[in-house]
Image (cartoon, rainbow, N blue to C red; front, side):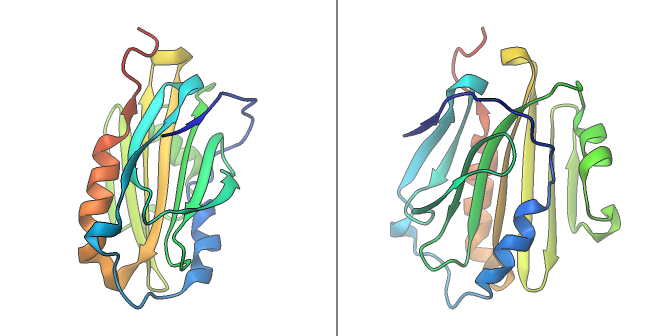
Length: 179
């Protein structure tokens, strides 16, 4: 289990910040095999967040996330990148206002967009790569935004779909956090 403590959070969301860096990986030769997943739980205690992630795929740490408190991970072959982070929601933004104020990509360029009162999920395809982001908004722990950004080869979309789904559905508050 990976755990990070809460630190000073002054970063501003750049939903697509991971996108540019991940383009260096290029297209992949093959999708990950199911026996390589090694699902683990990633937690950020100070923000009360956890999610499941395939540690067998994202085995290389690239250090802290560029946004908030979290970590940036990549696959050993460099073809996929996962950034997990939480940050304070000082401006009491909603998922809709957060996207409006911080998305650095025209909404028309999104291939998928779902916005609810408690989360957003967006996805786009550029240069053969899929860029997926989800952020959950919590009133627990003083109000926080819990997110992950995932970049992977478009030609492997079918293999990645269940991985993206599991990560996305697992993004949740820690049990008993702030209650």
